Length: 632
Image (cartoon, rainbow, N blue to C red; front, top):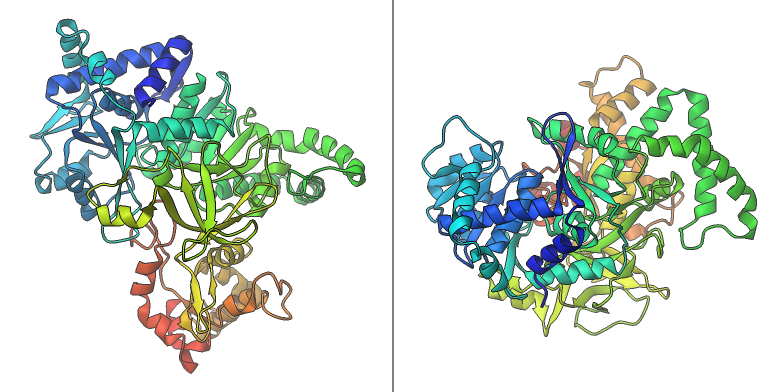
């Protein structure tokens, strides 16, 4: 069975002089070839062996995306050790302590900017022997050592033991563990997903059955490297093709790093980008703001161009046709004078995006398809290393999660595990070489998730007659009415939030209750602007102003109810009959969002249990109640 080492070595042999890695430390992106990367990987692996790293040892890696991250992982794997990638978004002491101790990490590799987190908790991590710091410091504490010193030790070790790294790496088997990748923490104790070398190489092969990359292609990695989507789609697939990848320039703060993304896209000019819905929405907002600044005439023209493109493109797979000849001609003109300029703003070479994570709104997909940079929805989960399906240039249907990768069995099952026919919705269940080994030190959770070799994803979906998968949300986060009927809430929540500027976040709730209710995080600034527009001069502190704002929120929901402008878009019984307006947003900091920016429903329900209960009272059902007024 093929290991990550095999994959890397094959690429180095075939593409030795091609650039593999790009990094911007000062004013420009500097290249590193496949051959040079291999040399650095060997230096690090040798240094780690000299340090005492043994096959099977766990090494935690906490850093922003950079060359050292990728070389760090490859160096760890060449020693036969296991990388435990940690998200830089983990702030809480408990989160980092739990993962480092639970994984039994003996070593930590860390960037200079993340080191303060490790220093704050190291006394609570007794198993850690050494902390390897990527960036030079003026002074090092107890267990800390400079990365450069490890590389120098590696150079010395290779002089006396030239074959040791090769010997170690050749002893690694396909089913040996490569990573312990922790879930995003939707429960008190996150689960450690054990991913093997073959899980990764199998998933790279599977992903390659849908997406074709050439050695000339390049990817600016804007998604976190600690997630296996960042591994497979970010750099291992590109490595397999002899292509090249760059990482976003690290800023002095997370906000500065975020601001570097559009700058780096324009400097590096990638041909492919991996994205998540939040970033995609940001890109769209920036494009629309740029057009708006050019004046009402330019905005009208752009909107008309979009309308023409939407009519011509339809859902992608069915675009064009004899009735669309006029639009085809118009679209060619619009593409030349408008959309090509939009593409220039994103580097000018971008062929397509691949969207992972939460479901991409179909309007967002239509928008990027119109401007000539399709954003293809994919689907996967960490337990599947992660790619399960994706749309691609050759086969796509907007609104779907794409075609299933090759060498993977997929079925849709009901709650009793019985396979359902085409078109019926149920739980997505898969089997293939990309399915995880299990959860680290958690046999009960493993047995619950993998049954008879099949991975039960916990996601709900169906297959259509053309072989496209549709993912509808969590199988287990269902709304359940008092008569036992079930419904997945994500589509309604995302649909309503995406189409209004007055609501930032929304969570629907119905646990065998008489009606569905919603917890709503409002956009206060937009509501203030609305109130000021309707009744100029009224102060926000005035109760009347807040009542006007609450009635606006009610109006947004009523649009989808009978006689509303969007009536029939969603089943009425699953639309909220009562709304609780919340005083704060769902964030990672308050642990109401996980690191994939998905709502942690259990924790939200727990935190707002009293508000949910109140919504089932006559007073709570009235949106103008005192609790809602206070929240604004």
